[in-house]
Amino acid sequence: MIPLYVIEEHHELFYIWNKATGRGFLPPFGNTLLHVDHHHDFMCGDYGADFHALFSSLEHIRTFTYEALGIADFICPAIYQGIFNEVVMLQNYRPFLSKPENKIMYLDAENQLIVQDVTPFSHIVLSKPEADQRLFTYRQGGLGDFITPQTTVLDIDLDYFCWDNSLSSITNKRLEITEQAYRDMTGNPYHPFRLFPKAMVRPVEEEGQFYLSYVGLPKPCPLPAKEQVHKRINLFVRWLKKNKSEFRLISICRSRYSGYTPRSLWVEIENGLLKHLAEIFDYDLQG
Image (cartoon, rainbow, N blue to C red; front, side):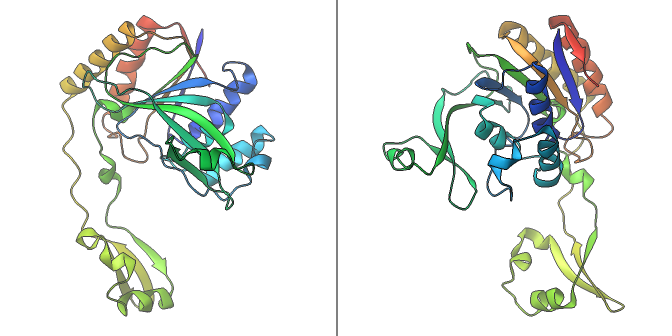
């Protein structure tokens, strides 16, 4: 049976992947990630961690997951670990998937993960003995032909079946700041926060307290009709049946707290998706 995990927010997958390799559900190296999501979640940079010490225990990895990772930067550390050397991003429903692009990831002298395309000048990086490097391939697009000889992890974000509704989780809120920070903003017309589009944030003073107020946010997109959601689920499931791979692990991310999946629809989408996946795969829902 294929282990299937349901998580709330996407960064939790980093811990799940490491947990799965420890349990033998997933080979520790050389897998393919099929990432089905409205967003690519492929940011990386400075995580503020000693990567060599980090991976010494599952407990360290769990701490790193919940303290250092966000919902858009959890894939790069897994590539650095070696869990994945092929990444396929499904972000739309067009019948096209790009050809594999060769990329290199390395840990630089400042302990930041860097991703670059492999070019004729990549030998400059590859030849550095101090650079900790990972080579991998990257594809993106929609429901085109998907073939890989490797074991594959199927990762599905429920927002793939609707669209970006993240703004619905952001109301007019405020964050308390110091008086000095307030003075810095009000006294500098070129302060970075004052240059945000549509004045998304502004400094506010109330009864001797100072705040950064979130204002002027665009309205969230209207909710999709349930019929449209189910049509997209059916389209994706038909593609899965056609491109059935050796999936060793399946994950479903709800994305309801971040607001990327509408809270009024996540149950409908999840139940519909699980029902259809059960028609294709013999999965075991993990706790």
